[in-house]
Length: 419
Image (cartoon, rainbow, N blue to C red):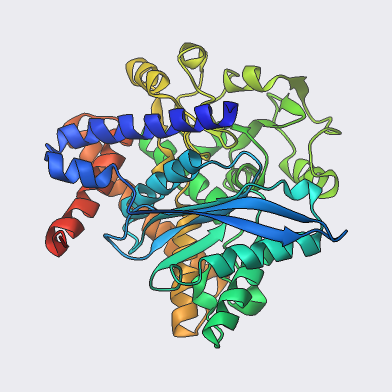
C-alpha cells in the first residue's frame, strides 16, 4: 500500500510539471485531456511453475502512453512493488523524455510484480517468456519497443526477443533494446545513461564558467547510472568527492578513488567495505559541500525539507523524479540550476534508439560512433532547451517540458484525432 501511494504522488509531480509548461504554451483543453491520459493500459496474469513444481501467479503490466511520434518506448521492471500507477507515471515520463531529445518514439513502460531475488534463473526465464507471449500482439519494432529497467538486464531482453521471434516465425531483434551484443545489442548502451548525465553536466559547467578541475561532484546512488557518471566525470578531470549506495554514503573532500569504488561494487555488489572516505548518511550526502549534485538513485529525495540546505550550484538528475515541485521552487529561488531528469538521463533511451536503428538496417556502429552521435543528440537538444529557458526566463525543467509537449502536440495536430 505504501508503494502505491508513493508512486501516485510521483505521477502527481509529473502532472504538476506538465501543467506548468502547458500553461505557458497556452495549451487548449482538448490537448491537455489527450496528453494527460495514457493511450493503452494492459494488465494480465502470469501463471508460472516454480522449480519445485508448484504454481504461482503474478501480475504483468504494460502501459503505452503515447504513439503520437512513433512506437512506444520504455523499460520492463521486475519488482514486488510494481503498480499500475507506477508504470503509468514512468510511461508518462518516457513520452516527454523521448520528445525532448527528438526521438521518433512515444512513451511506454512495463512491469511484473515479482521479487527476482527469490527466483532462480530458470524461473525468471519462464516469467519473462510468459510476459512476452501475453504482449505479442501489441509489441514489435513498429508498435512498442521494451528495454531493461529495474531488476531486468540484457539476458531478460534476449528471452523476450526470442519468445517474440518464435511467435513471429522469424528473428526480429528490433522488438527490444538493451540486448547482448551477440544478438543485436549496441555498443555503448550499458554506460549510456551515465554518459548522458556527464555530457549534460559538463556542458552546463562550461556555461557556468566552472572548469572541470574546479568541479567537485557528489553522486547519490552507485548503481549503473551513478557508477558510470562517476567514472566519466573523473575521466573529464572533475573531482568526485561523494558517493553512496544502500550501505551509506562516503565523502572525501580530497577526492574519491572512483576506480577502487567501482572495483569494489563489481566484486561485492555494494560499497559496504569502502574505506576511501568518511562514512556519512545518505541524507547528509545530499547537503554535502560540492559544486554538482547528481541524485541517481530514488525518486523524491530532494524535498522542501532539505532543499534549503543543498550546497550544490548545479543539480543533474540521473534518477527519475528525484526532486519534488516544492524543492524545485526553492532551488529556483536560490539560483541553483537543475537539469531535469527528462533531459539529464535521456542518454539511455537515445542509445536504445540507436540500437533500434542498427537492428533495422542490419549494420552496427563502432563505439566511438555511438558516443559521438549520443553527444551530438544530447548537446543539440540541450542547447535548444537552454535557448528557450533564457528567452522566457524560466527554469530548465519548464523549458524541457515545453519543448517536449510542443513536439508531441505538433505531431498530434498534424495527424488529427481519429474519432
